[in-house]
Image (cartoon, rainbow, N blue to C red; front, side, top):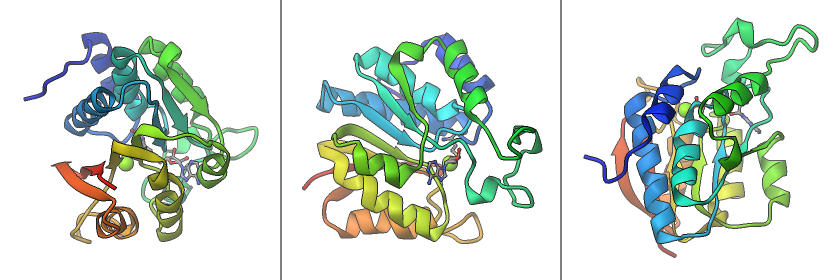
Length: 215
Ligand code: SAH
Ligand code: MG
């Protein structure tokens, strides 16, 4: 049972948005962000990898209820695994003009229809580059960007130092069994976070893991 609850309209909007966040994991994400905001009021949230805005709605709703904001970082060109010929490609997301993936229009519509524009600030750009210049700390950091070894390792190095002490780090698509999914979020983000001694595991919901920054 959750301590917090989303508005019905936000929940419906999240489920109607395109994306890769199952409803139970989305609700766990919402809960984790609400908890983070209680622990560290006045700190913003950030997500890496928004795609068409589904997770952004779960987190934007938590930001709305907590009087903070969500920064939603994505270059909107898709991860390696979203490109033509790869497992997670959706052909209608290719922009005819550029010939490249473009999820930004979908993201904008999803956040608009959820009524969350005041609480969701899109950062349209490359994750490590954005992180180099966004000189802030965050009460809640959600990493769901590129799932190759190198992008995951870069996201670990870029974003985990920006979790405020006592804040929450959430990681999506963490699979300990290679038969169930790629290993990079587990090996390049989750394990190094725990082994660093800076983070302690809090909860597991499907492939979503949350940790608390303790040092
Ligand atoms: N959280 C989303 C799914 C994210 S899919 C949901 O709830 O459905 C992964 C996203 O990460 C893609 O949209 C891709 O464009 C983005 N991404 C991958 N590598 C990136 C990088 N280096 N910089 C910015 N965004 C990146
Ligand atoms: Mg994911």
